Image (cartoon, rainbow, N blue to C red; front, side):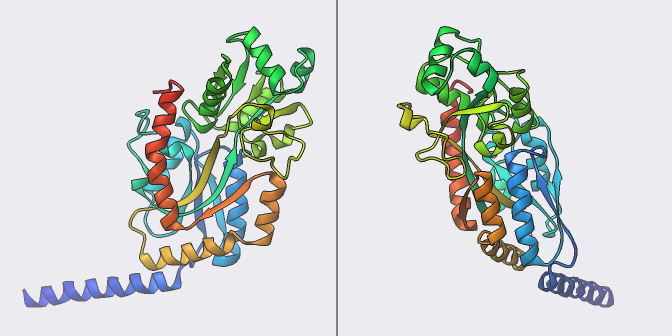
Length: 321
């Protein structure tokens, strides 16, 4: 019995030493980074750019895997359910704060170890250019006048049901007294933007970055839900400056599954803090119209905790709950 006990103790010691060595040498191979939303959307673009910056800090390849579906639930749950070895993490978004309230998932921010917040992006009212011209819509006020004259007829796209850009439509309706029909797209904003550019719907309430490829080429921005104009889109007025007090934005950040070795977490946190200042990343975000809004792990955890309370209340205000 003593001999068996000694063998067990020795094995445990060897395993512990191996774990310590593994953490000290981390990373020794490529890392998988999960994106809960489709390729071509704002989250995907932000994540891929940030991964390139992280590669410079970590010295290994980071591969983005788009695990979409169920309004982002599939990807978000995959991040939390990943092996806690530091070789799989992902980008969590605004929608994580809304899943439990909608009974879409039991997962909340408490199922993750947040690494950092990377970005916030304001929603914008962006419409099909031909449709706007045909109906004498030249700014946010004339859009609102048209919508009031045609209640329930204007179709605006967001992302999935109950997602950030769906709720953006609710904020717009509450602030302006209009009745529009929100069309949802389960895989994210990219599909909504294409539908608007092709004239299948009249417009979108997504971020400027997500509509960027079609702005001036099928889509026209009427108003941005921010307190100041986006430097990448200086000609796009805010809703506020047009007399409509609508301010609303999404958030994106990196998170790990629970249980990753503390030494590995510390290395990733340091890499994120350096990557956020990478000149190529900063240039990409500025050119893409995406706002860098860094928070460290502690700050981001507190932010997510507050969002878990605030977002359901906002959803109630727009009759989503």
